[in-house]
Image 1: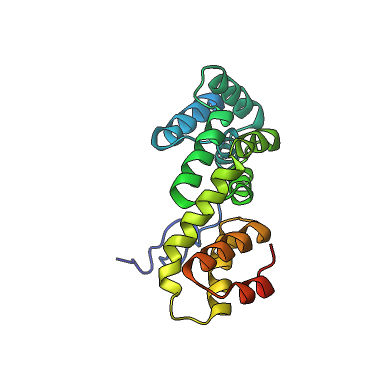
Image 2 (image 1 turned 135 degrees about the horizontal axis):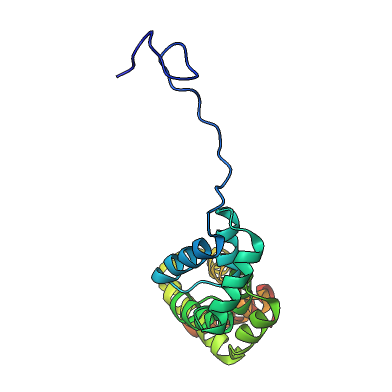
Length: 194
């Protein structure tokens, strides 16, 4: 209910003054606030040092307090970007079929150091990556039956490209799958070079 006439401080017509965007409030004990925020964020799911640092920055926690807490959490093993990257690569490759390029992009977005990213995605065996690409194509192959050949190739290769597979690998896997299905090898040779 809005009162008319009496108003509140700063308003003569009884309405509340417009709200302004508030700056993040600096906590009384920044290290305690940083610890609490990190513990809360780490409760549900593992996070990278970069993700936690960004969350603290958004909350207005001073950089020196954030750095001290992040270093302590790393020392005791609550933050481990190397383990995070390894688990991420394994999980996202197995679960979603993502290739090295897509996995590296996701890890970089989460603030993982480039050296750790390269090490984690480097553990993904090229033969395993190709086998995963083939499994993805095999699953999608049935759904593309009835489409003209060029459209099938575009759909299958496009699906692999969106998952981070190189064009060469995608076309090679699609060609092999279509040949095994009985597609004309001459057409495939023309349109999908090795």
